[in-house]
Image 1 (cartoon, rainbow, N blue to C red):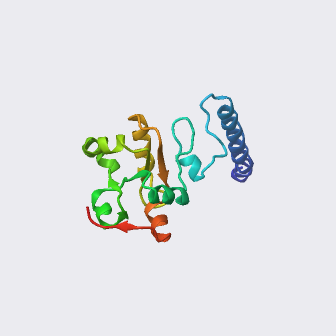
Image 2 (tube, helix red, strand yellow):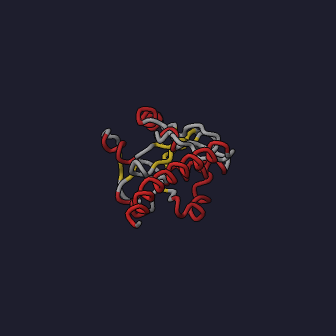
Image 3 (cartoon, rainbow, N blue to C red):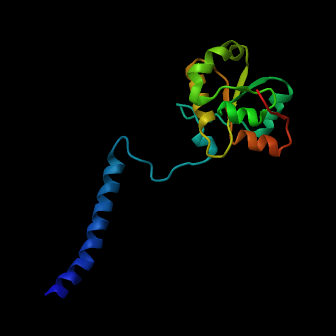
Length: 163
């Protein structure tokens, strides 16, 4: 008797799991706010504005803007990390304290044509959050240099330390 029930459970449990999965997929498909089953995890998709336009600037373009002094670079990391090393000439606007520092830099940012926000590390999202904030504040040409400090240093481009 117990062996019979065990055999029955061995095929019923997986069957119930398959049925539940199919129901979940169906509900997800028909919902207007369903979750995408296949996502785009590229930097261009991850670092996009509210409309879906990519904010990513590649290293070559960023370096060109730097050489022509045509962009302001903003380091979105905390001040202690900024002091340890940053892109030469970059201003520190730490995302965690943006309310405290923004007004000090607002006039300089208003004069900028292009603003390039960066932090460090492929998964660092501080620069993206800062770029979205700046767009909300009315700044038009705001970009993100993904893994900014690392790719900048690896390319041998100018860096500085201190405040």
